[in-house]
Image (cartoon, rainbow, N blue to C red; front, side, top):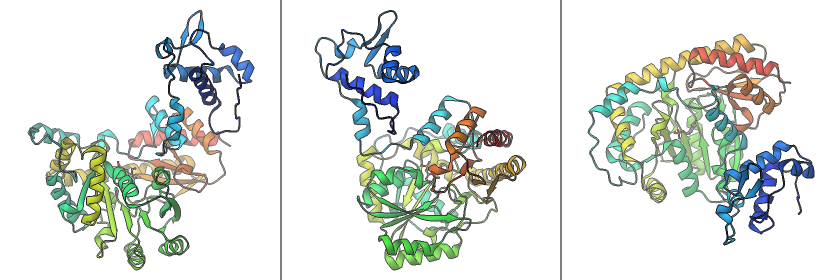
Length: 477
Ligand SMILES: Cc1ncc(COP(=O)(O)O)c(C=O)c1O
């Protein structure tokens, strides 16, 4: 039996062992009537820790391929093999072969830790439950008769909700549109995915910000796009650098998050937006404006959007209710030229036959209700308090060790650790101390950054979270 383990491979050793055994089961090397090697024997044979073999066997057992029997050791599962000796598919090979790429391992790890452990959560980019407008939503749902149309709704989204969003974006974002130029999506995320899938082709060059939320998304790579990075500094992006990138790479689309950017919190000035639009019109490059945060200005000022300044129709505008109402509603939207919206809507119909009606009704009634304005005001006040708390805690526990710009809206703060630090060790130590955040390398190319979200915890837990992070940092070289 050949055990060709590649100890330099990114694939963990236990996975490699599990795959070799899985293939052995499929080709008859490990028949159902003979026991598999014992954990102790195999560990010695392969010169690995016994826990590595335990993990390999755990994986095979959870896939139903082997069974562990007290007394008689580990055997190939009879259920799947049985008398017929049918070959079973090598699921791991399928899992790795798909063209839709998985999230980065560290992103998957963060999600798992958050599910499995009770940690102070400075990682999830969403509001805490107490910030959701529960009472108002309860009132809306208890008075509303839900016996309405329950067949497939319009593929672009419920027509009443689209009218409501037309008024909403006019009032809050100064955007002039109409219901046929809007597509309701499952959050901003689905809108981004549809744009990437339907309007671009493999080999196209696109610009995304560095750091950014988009930097962390494998959807660009899955679609075979070439991504070029526009640096974000304290003042946001420099439109001249955008021009340089276009000259070098013939950019087909630009993805920007101009208001309270995730993760840096930066807000582009109107002059920057205008220059970006000039470049866009002069060179005919569409801009995707991803705007989940512009309603959260702590100064209470109206934030200009690219779309509100877009007279030629160069901007596809994406937003959602996730960061201002509730992420679980999964209500987002994209606004653009009718022909583009129809194209995206046709794709959405192929994917899910249009958005679920219930959450569209709830979203519609809430945005239309007397509660909405008040909710946003209260939310912004609370977010500002939490922003103040995280700034105070960072200064208190880590004054000389980190630097950051203070965001005037949004839900994230982007911190630079002033010394070199092993990012993964710091994350491990922080998890041990009971706090989680997003390591900077998942969101951008620069070293020694972390992103804290201050919307998910209250002031007290933010303070404790930063205290624990400071302890973890002090114990990490
Ligand atoms: C800039 C940005 N765009 C899009 C999303 C996706 O949000 P959702 O799909 O919940 O609307 C996020 C979430 O963090 C974000 O920060």
